[in-house]
Image 1 (cartoon, helix red, strand yellow):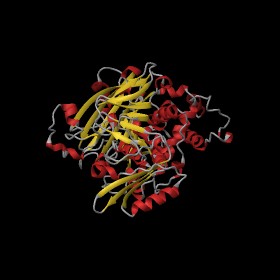
Image 2 (cartoon, helix red, strand yellow; image 1 turned 180 degrees about the vertical axis):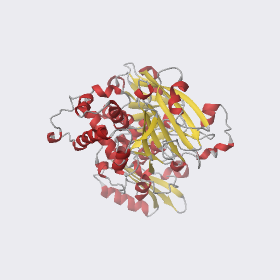
Image 3 (cartoon, one colour; image 1 turned 90 degrees about the horizontal axis):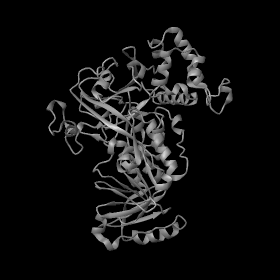
Image 4 (tube, helix red, strand yellow; image 1 turned 60 degrees about the vertical axis):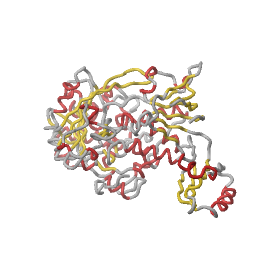
Length: 544
């Protein structure tokens, strides 16, 4: 640990792990060294050859000499690093050859003994203990089933099937570590009832969200959004959406308040009504992404979700980082940032050792004096033995409760998944009710959402503060993520990651749109298995 790195990342939350993966894929970190186990087997026989790509013939010559003595048992290949682990029949593992294409190194540390940080998934009684956290006891009732079968997300969110996070997964090839399943349905709360957000033309015709004439007007608006191409003025119909507000665009088509609310909150996924007075371009882009996500796997919603819970995501990015030579250290208590006399971070001290670096990436908990509180999230976690009523017996759903329907300043979100996503024992469902806290009584604020759940086996409440960095990264070399919001999708999360990436590297990160063209059966980077499970056809029994 006592050496210098280009970047030290503190915390293994999803944002930090995505950043670590993006930096590694782009050549920001290449660091490879033999483990302590290898050294203990035969220290003097460990050979490290760091060669440029310019001299492959030297590697071949050197390798032939070694292979005469050893057999290659494992090869780890990445765009920026190559690793060969060598084994001899008599002496076991004897050495490692590493050659790399750049000299930059990244160290990833976490005070916890598990991946995920605030965005981890908890079981009931084992190492990551949900029951002790909320009940102060290690003994949940037997009727809840085996603890090991639970993976309860602490930051519950679905993924848009064609959203920024999905494109990031494809871009970094992290999908080979994951399996997904589509979410059964997306719903919206309107006039005291739950309504399904139409996923097909037939559902749109039958929907009671709009009257017959309103559907015709809405259809004209949706056709405009579908045909809109920012680079083709012919599709703009004389409107500059960078100046025209969303309110002005919607009023052009004569849509009423209920339809406007449905479009803004259930399709464009805005958290409040501020979008109405902002340029309409953002809303149109959000609606197009929703439509592309909905059509990608031909499911009942635009969302997908990883099997075994969201903690699989940071673990997958950690694997990616390690595959490109990243160094990970868990259970590192008291990670203290070190600053020079000019206030610039130059390292992190833990266990009496200091790792020096040029930049530090962390979540707000590591630098509480460089962030400010911007809000609070209230959340209820329910364990149930049935799906949410009035959702057509769907095992996984999102329900959005728009602010005006509840007389609030921000939306409320319901998130539900079940044993089919490997997050609970068979017959059990996990539901979450989340919102931006507006009072000091989270139980009372969340009641409208909890009332929609029906009978619950167990109910837990929690609140957490949201923080935003107030430092100047160019001055102190500290890059701090923002806290997770109450939404049940990842778009705001990934936008924060890409913004941090730009600040760290000075480059814009262009996540390709090639995912948009992937058909429902197309591989996402991990074989047919991922494509099948994304459509709900796989058994999902592999623990990847």
